[in-house]
Length: 450
Image (tube, rainbow, N blue to C red; front, side):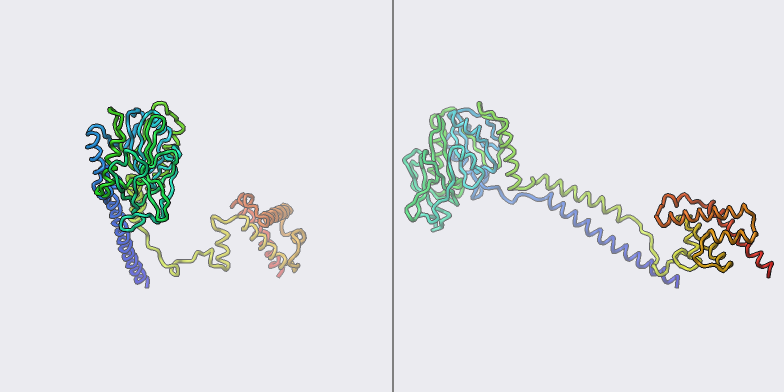
C-alpha cells in the first residue's frame, strides 16, 4: 500500500511539472512575440498636412508651389520654430497646430511688421486666433454651392476685393470652419442656401504687420490643388506673404512643431512656461505616451515578468503526502496521553503543569479525607497536618506551593502571558516532588493501618 501511494505521488508530481513547464513556455513565447511586435511597429502613412507628405492630404505640392513663387532659398520648412531668430521682414505659416502657440511672441512679431498666416479649422489654434479677436463659427449647414452636393465640401467664393483673390473664382473646402472678425477684410466666404454668409478667410493689417486666418488648412493640400481656384489662391498666398519684403524668409510649421525662444521684445518667461505646459498636456491628451516610452515600458514589463517567472519555474517543490496518511501529533489526539503531551510541549506554558499538580493533589486528598469537592486549600492542609505524616517544614512547603498555584490560576484567568512565561521547569519539578512526597506519606500510613 505504501509503495503504491509513493508511486502515485511520483507520477502526479512529474506530470504536474510537465504541465507547469508547458504553461511557462507559452507565457514566455507570448511575451517575446508581443515585445517583438511593439518594437517592429511602424507608422502606416504620413500625418495630415505633412510638408513632405505626397499622399492626398499632404503638403508637398504646396511647398513646391511656394518655392517656385518666392524662390528656393526663402522658404524654410521646419519642425522647430525659433521666435528669437525671426525679424519683422519674415513671414510664418502655421498649419493646424496641435498645441497652444505662443500668443505673446506671435503678437509682437506681427506688430513688428511680420506676416502671419494661420490655417486651422479644428486644431489648437483657438488661443492664437482669439489673441487677434478672431472667433471660430460654424459654416452654413446647407451651403448654396457644394462639391457633389456634399455640405462638408462647401465651395467658397471671393469676398471683398483683395490681392489674395486675384484669378480666384471658387475654392473647394473640406470640413471647414468659419471665422468672425468684423474689423478684418473677408477674402473668402461661404454662402448658405438661405442667403446668409460666413467668412472662411479674413485678412488685415495689424500695426504694420499682416495677419491672414483661413478656417480650412485643406484648401492647399495636394488633392485640393488640382482645382484651379485653390491653386490660384495658393500662389496669391505665397506672393502676399513677401509683398514689400525683399529680404525676409517664409517659415512653414505644421501640426507637432516645437517652439523655442521669444520674439525680440516679447520675452515673458511665465507665459512661455505655460505655453510649453499646455503643449505637453494637449499632446498627451491627443496622442498618449510617445512611441519610445511605450517600447521601453513593454521591454521593462516583459523583463520584470521573466525575472519573476523564471526563478519560480526553476524552483523544485517537495512532494507532499496526503493528509489522511500523515501522522497525527500526540498532543492533538486527546485522552490522558494527549493531555500530558500538550502540557510537556516545548511551547506550552509551564503554569498549566503547575495547575495539573494542584488538581491532582486536591482531588486525591479530598477523596482520601472524604471532603467536599469544593473544599478550600486551607482545610485540606489542616487535615494533612492533623495526620502528622510529614514534618512542619513540609506542611509549610505545601502551603507555599498551593499559594503559588493559586497565583498561577489567577494569571491564567486574566491572561497574563508574560507572568506565565516566567514559570520554569525547575519550579514545576520541585512542586511535583513535594506533591508526590506528601501523597506517598498519606497513602503509606493508610496502608499500614490496613
